[in-house]
Length: 440
Image (cartoon, rainbow, N blue to C red; front, side, top):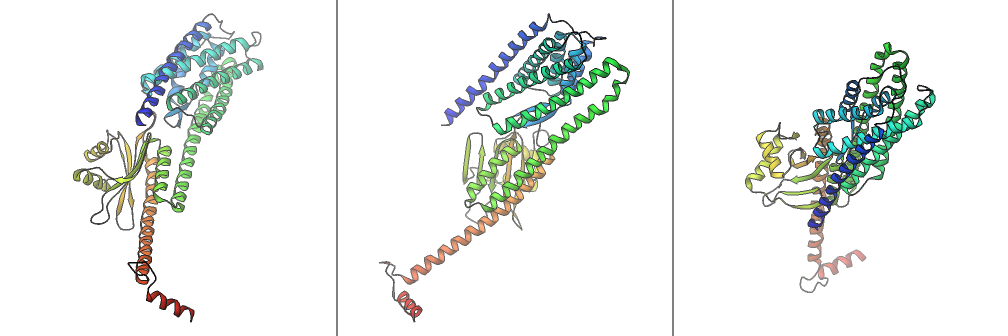
């Protein structure tokens, strides 16, 4: 089974380079197609380096919306694209977009070669489609009128839709599935932001066309829009995390099977904190018990089982109580934190303590942050600590209920033994006399 899953994963990952290569080829063909297109009439031409700088700044000041392993980025690059449509040659706009994005993605975001190739191909193809559609739709006799503005809106929106579609295709090829609700939600957010950016770009174009000397007044509104995007995404993520915490607590409190409920909470923790693995380690409470763990990961679900660690490893795990709650990463963690990461086989993570009233009963861990644009931060750690507190309380209550059930079963067993013959199982004289007294 695991071999089949590994082969399917390898096959899916192998398709992404093919998509990146296909995008690069399509972008090269589209760029060659826009070379002969003429520059629209304008009072002046923007230097290529200034337009490339606008694209670069737009791709540095981005808002990331995490979607499982990948992050879709929202920026003000549409503003730079709209400016280029009206004030530069089509091929210059495409090459400036490619150069500006390459500098931002390489020097600022430090993207991997595969992701860099995919994104540059996607950006270049989108820019080429936008300038080609704008050249086709915009009227030559009225370069700054209503119809030209509508042409820019249609061209950039369609090009952005193509880029979003390529992101969904890459996500599906890499993971083998696509969450429809998440895809449609991100698509709607992307389209709304795109329309806002295009309208803002058209306002900038009109000021540059007629009143270039007051364009600087738009610095504050543009910065406000960027901050508004960032604030909205931050509030959206906070609301999702609070909803997850509430649902997890309710699920734990009302679950009939505690082991199954813990696995469900760990699966939800993986999704909420965008991690590859999540697990709970329970310390022994009395002599003769062993340390146990339960966890979920990529392609694995492990019910409660004994921890396969030597005495030194178990001492290291229990010693993390003094450190937690903590974010563990190679650059900032202590030697014990690095050893703990090595024991669990993860590169980074968060650890929190599961507590009862007087002492700790275990640890809760999530590890291996997904994606390249974010790491575990203090907000994640605070939420994780709250989740661990609720989980620890539920675990302690679950142990108490389990003990009560064992006591009840023992009482029933002792009562049966006292009122029945141990050899034949037939009711004895004591039960007969008790029934006679009850009927009198």
